[in-house]
Length: 579
Image (cartoon, rainbow, N blue to C red):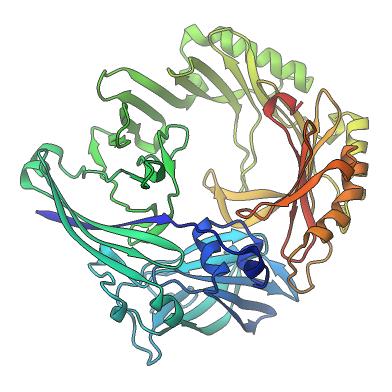
């Protein structure tokens, strides 16, 4: 028999006194996090740290810690010559498998105060938020056969040791010890033994071991064991644990349908990521995959849902098909192949795409290189997208593409880069003036512009791009827009602005309502033509966005960085008005 320990985590939220919450000056509250972490911080389970180490002109600074025995969250940032740089550089070469032979790797260890390694420590999960990132470290891991059974298993203090040898392409030595007191959180942690078993007639058992509540989340530990009969029938394809949890009123408070791709998701709510030895995964990480003649298959279903789907994936995801497991009807089809393999009956679709490309770009010297086909039985959509060849080089460059609706034979949309020289001069001037109207903007020169159309959406976006550190796309280095202005192609009105603020060297600052109103009011008038006198300002508790709303008028959403600078502002309009 085989066994797998599975930890299921759901976020917990609770009402907190606004007066009490306002007294807590926490960086965790300035970024968009799940309600569980925010609840824990507001109840006093965060600790200021401000420990740092500098080498080669680069400083690694751990700023604050949220102490929950089930996930210790450390807020950190990296600076070079006093200016913030990409915090993801910490993971350029993280956790080498051969630390003795490869000295330029980054590692960490979690110990008690006496320096003894803790059992069950799992791999870290990092989430970037502007100039900072949050490193989540667990001190128990059921997949390693170890989990905390009672408060006595929780040490009063742990120490997180950073051993960083490479940041980006800079070699150095950044060693830091960060003590974390778990004593307050330990007293607020509850453990409820369950000891319940469910035996499935299909040949597996579910042992519900324990329910435990921490300051920021709850976890349900379940052990799954498959019988030999199951293994003989399904091989290495293990049963997936899907769930729906309801409160006393019958309302769903947490659910997971087992499907990572939200395009196909049936139900998911309050689902947290939990790190295991298999990598970052939603909650439980027990994804069985069986290889059969080059096809991978997995099953996913939602408890209580009418639909159960089979997903068939070809190697490299060149083909993905979902099938209703009850009726055997094909639900969705996604295919990717070379243009030379295009069937003859799609020749007209290709001609339509070529004609649209020529009309929008003024030329058709380039040739489409690949094709993507997508079918969705639910909404009746059937599209074929023709893409240009990916440019050579280390950095991913989005290729031009045109989509055709196969049912109507008409163009459904496109994503095109005509170049700044071909952009409308008045629209470009509007984009440049918009950046000038943004306070503290660096006013970077625009490098490119793209024209995007998809259904009612029809926009132009002027951008300045930069390589995004360790982020990858299409197997290459990814880029991100450090400055962009989005303009409606039909309305010629600004819809969104993203800037790179000049002031990145000051102290961290949480933006108050008064600050936000003072900064945004002139921007709203000059950029969007909106007078905020009749607007009400609310700050989103989950994401930290400043939302200016007035009945019957378009809302305006502003985002500030951790230095108090306005970094992004956009009109909150539906797709029918993004044009």
